[in-house]
Amino acid sequence: MIPEPQEAHGLVMLLGNGLGEAMAGMRSRQARLELARAEARGSPSVAARRAEAEASDAAVRVAQAEVRRLRVTEPRAGKGTVGVYGHVLDDGDPVVGAVVALVGDDEALVCIDTDKAGSFALTVDSERALGLRVSIGERVVHRDEEATIAPGPLATYRLVELGESTPQAPTQHACGGDEQPEHSGPLPKPGGSLTQVLKKLRASGVPVAKVWLYASDDSTPKVTKIREVDGGVGLNVQGRLTDAGRLSVVASVLAHQPEAERAGVGSSSAAAALLKAGRVTRWSEAERVSRLKPADVAERFGLDRAQADALSSALATTMATIEIVEEG
Image: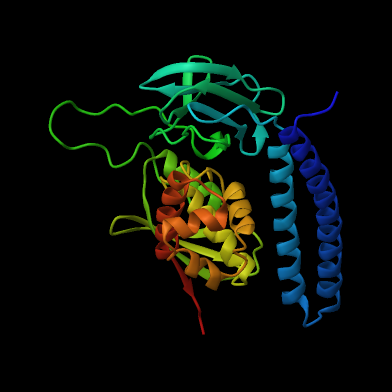
């Protein structure tokens, strides 16, 4: 059976990216080995080897994300037809049997269960943009705040990461008056990774107003102090001040932004993959991209206008939130 042109293109892309994933994996292992050797010798090239290893790891994650996307058959889309496909994950693991629905005016127009890979594909005739809703049993675990999946020639890809986006149940509070609880639980304790702490703060409804990054040899940025500041809390974070180390913090903070879901970066790994795909490999480049207009962001990252608007806003907020502390 001869595949349709679009399907054939996808197969070719899958083959190419599959080879790319394997080659990136080999290079990542080699870079880690060279780093270990440099550290064992006390070589002055340790910093350069570490940066190369981190960049190689990021390349593997990008290739894996692209292969995962290409393994889902892209649904029909076009004028008057909305198509969406993607994955539902929980901290990177596939969620099997979740019910994904395209929704208009709170009415589910079409539904499908996720498969063993957590993937789904939906298409429905509609002249207007629709939203995405994900349910597990009787519980809604994700709902788009705005309808951004619009009809058009290409289906929209969506990655729903429940580990960082699952809404928490509301907490009880006194009736009457305007006073509401500041957050729904105690603040997390310092010592965890930045991604873990941000995840807990988001679940508690606590905004992060500032992140100060201090130099350390930790490959994973860690939160050492949490303090109250104007507009929310401030985090002292220790991590590497290399470009790769700084961009790791950018990815975590970017995924924490309220607009991140609409931009398709509901997790730090998805945010890191998007930055890599947009050729953002240096801190200075992240600063420059955060000042681009949404139209330029759309072109650079291959997003539709609604996603680009959300990413542009989230990037600007992220870069304004992070401050590099160069202690001397």
